[in-house]
Image (tube, rainbow, N blue to C red; front, top):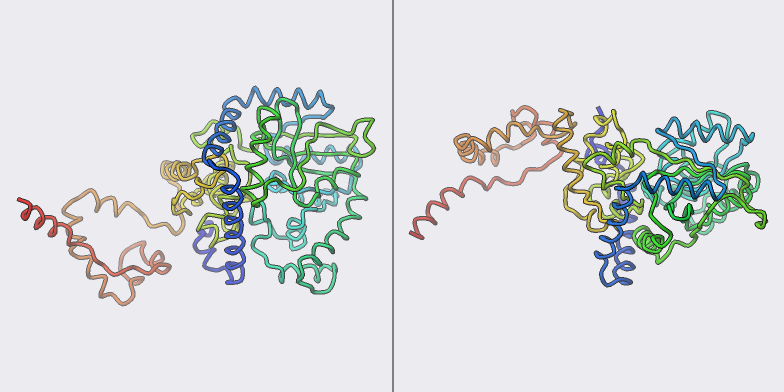
Length: 464
């Protein structure tokens, strides 16, 4: 059985908990300052962006066909991957045909989703992450804990220890020194690479252009010296036309990092033209399904609007305490609590507990730049787990409460007897089946119930 998120959070070190909390709060504050400072009606923009994305999803077959035709017209070779295995094999086949053994990779959640790095290494391809955070995660043989900030769970002391351990310099916690050392190490990897692998933030069905945004320019460095560009892209990343980039890029930068625009924004139409001095001679686009079509046909299709900004993670009280690793999926936080179980397909039961790791406070919906009704989707997935009789580790069985709540006599008896709990020194030892483990992690408040009926009777008599 999977480890419940509350148990995972309880075992976190105070250092990790503080690091994640500080990072999440900083991200939320920057978003609020920039987004609400630049726009008078943020909700109108969010609804517009949500409608555009939903329209595209509702007509995805048409827009996907249009995008493929334009991409091929631009000189790119388009492939389709039904699942992670097909995506990995397609990438490896492209590399092997070109005898490419050295790969540099820009930050991409799609490649994390299919566990590409480990697969390539197993098959003799050296794959180096070039985003600073992802590079550190790779050195530590760790996994990202945040969509935008993969090392949200690490502080600069831990990073300095990693760099020292891997021979990248003496122990030094200065962020600029750490960055310079990573830059010096990665420059040679860029120049020696045979291929560059990226994801994409958006794809225009109108022009076939893909958009890649970074704050470190690493995607640009990956592509400039490489002979081959491979882009692994989820099918939901398509937007109708180029004019939509203006809407989504403004919302993405402000929602993700509190910037008006991400520092490096690249529009790529295809492989290098004869008039260009540098760039890939081949461009391969692999459109990834991996459960997306099934999700599109479900009652949770709105989750595919997501533009991977991480705003919902930053604001979520559960994520702030548990970190992204608690969710056991590449996507953590509110977005992961919905997307993880959906993309799992037949393994839904393995992630069915994630939708219950939420207070349903609605903050995730309020900050979502494409207005995804995440709390509603969490409830739908909870209902799905109930219908399929999927057990939830650590969850309190609700059948006894349901019986109490639907039988007035039993309810009145429970209300009269509830005060007894105030005299029990250790509530966790109450002889109630199923409550022991649950109560060990909770402190019950003093019982104050059982007096409403008497008050109501007196109130009714006085009114009469």
